[in-house]
Every structure is written in C-alpha cells, then in structure tokens.
Length: 136
Image 1: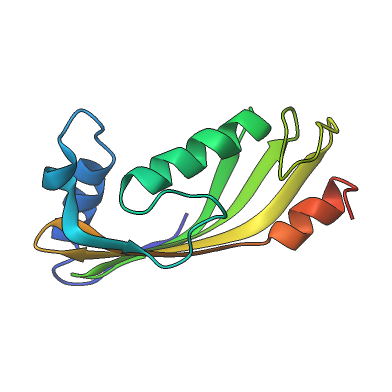
Image 2: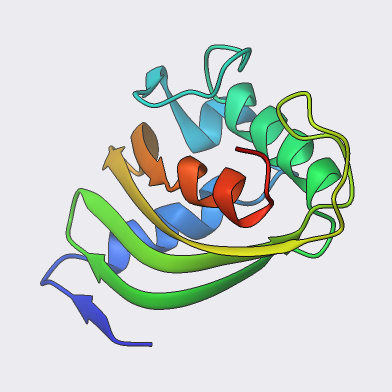
C-alpha cells in the first residue's frame, strides 16, 4: 500500500485516528459544521450519518474487505483509494440477499481543520455493485 505523507501530514493521520475512536465525544472528533458532501439516501445529517451508513452497509454485506491501493495525506486532507469487496448477505437498496460477491473502486477524501474532521467526499461504484450482484 503506497502512502504519501506531505510535510505536516502526521497531524492529519493523528486526527484521523482520533476521529475513528468512537469512545471520544463527537465534538472532539468533528467540527461543529461537519459536512458530508456525498451522503447516501436516507443518511442522517452530521457526523452520526457516516456511522449510520457503514452500519447499514455492514448489514447488507457482512464480510466487507477494504484493499487500500493508495493513501495520500496532507496537512488538511486524508485521501484513500481502495477496492471495496463484500458478499450480499442482507437487504441492499430494497433488494433481497443474492449471496453474490462484488469488488468495486472506492475513493474517500476527508478534510480536517483544527485537528477535527470537517468534510467528507466519497465515491463508490454503486452501479458496479448492482451489476455484479445481478440486480440490474
């Protein structure tokens, strides 16, 4: 997994680790104006929305695997490119489980300000998931 860390990027890595620590209060992990620029349908607004999404996604695909291809870290951004895989074992977008496996590309760009997560942009090949599961 190639990782490129720009000067000043270690603080962003530390902030990312804090953001993932659910034992810490949200106000220590996220800015008060946190924005998810690419929320899923029905996803709650704010930091709790991301946890909600991954909980729902994890119910549909119980064996999720993230193969990190590359990570780039700057003083204000944490960017990850990965292959995302899973087996369809629960309801997904109204579709009953197929038992089929998918692998698609996923890109996440996470912004940080003052040591807290401020923004998230993400792109997952949802069409690829549906096609590989035979749902289209």
